[in-house]
Length: 211
Image (cartoon, rainbow, N blue to C red; front, side):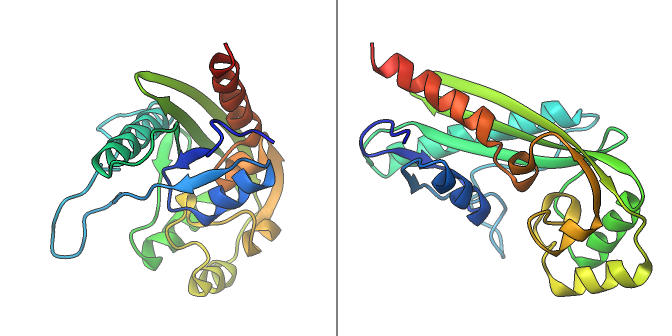
């Protein structure tokens, strides 16, 4: 079991999938939540997830993962919590270099799935681990081949809500698994937290803390 330090790390994410994946490899963690999008009616938010003009998918997920880790670290200090490393991640889908993020609504989710239908796309997940001024970073890139989807398949999937708030408008660990012809890369990375890369970052931190 990786435990850094004894009380564990902070996970700066709302994703239940990332919690499950961390638990799968025996990492002790505490949730450190922050606002990723503006609240209804306005108000403070910790970061803006909109891509920059012309931003490449890899640059985007790296920037977002680092920003989430930094936002989590600020929250930890603001709340006077016991200091511990902060882990954050960001996932996006890219089709021919174009970022396909989380759909704003189900109409956009249907459009995204129609674009992915019968195509090979990339799923990029960046992981950042912040500990004081030190930030470790890793990137996982996987390729997913989707089968040709009918309009009915897209409509039924979107209506079920599984793709709501998911990069690329689908969840590979759910019913969308039947759409995937081939996956090259990291299954856990496509889910939202590449376990190999995450373990490498934690091992680096554990190695430094033992000296």
